[in-house]
Image 1 (cartoon, rainbow, N blue to C red):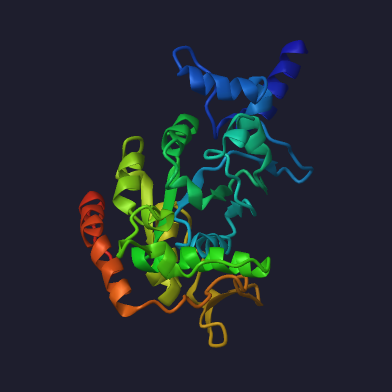
Image 2 (cartoon, rainbow, N blue to C red):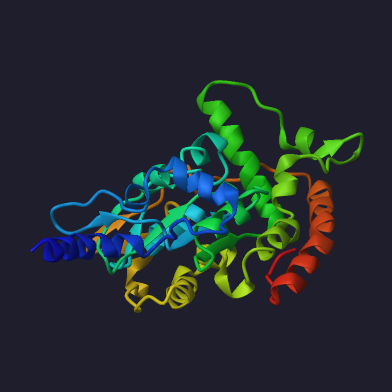
Length: 311
């Protein structure tokens, strides 16, 4: 009887162990440390369970970036698929020391409840440009599938600035013009953080140190805006999801100027903070911006073996 009871307990615990990796002899000390801080193995790797059989599980897919590249749109579109369970908020587990020090148990607790057949997805755009993140993600799961959505680097810079500008405006705080950030002593200010975030090749090199290119699917953010369905089809194939998202799930909203979603007869658009008009930039300065990214873009194209329709 005792043996039967033990077997039943092990059977209940078994599915929750699949998504992650227990501590094993010879594992890197930092990996062991993170797992220890999460608690005993069965607590660290097993999320809360609901009466309907759903449970929290570590993500099998992460949208790693890029900031202002369309990560929210990608997550919302991917959430149309019935086999996807997405975390609502950006978790910032791998890039914020305060969160990472809490261990995998804390991370697991931020995940949505999902059925055993569902794919759990988390998105935090800052992951792509954070130096420590690729190694940390690899320690958790070297077989994880990563989604990276990119836009024209110059457009991304302008979107980056626009977001911060509106944040200041909402708080009734003054904010310098974009020219004050982009130009210093008559030259392009290469120390501007928004510029550095758009140097995709430098950040991609860091990720490729830990993950082969076949584990990273690059979504064309500019095409996702213009015609989302073909890009989402590629994402479904990469994640090995059955094709469930259809062209009928998208419709163009003339008022907003971009595509919105239609799910089970219900229409929904992205938050009003998305798709904001960029500030007017002097054509000569914009030309300098395009020129600055010309060589970095070429390096990125060579790195990933494909090209994008960027200036």
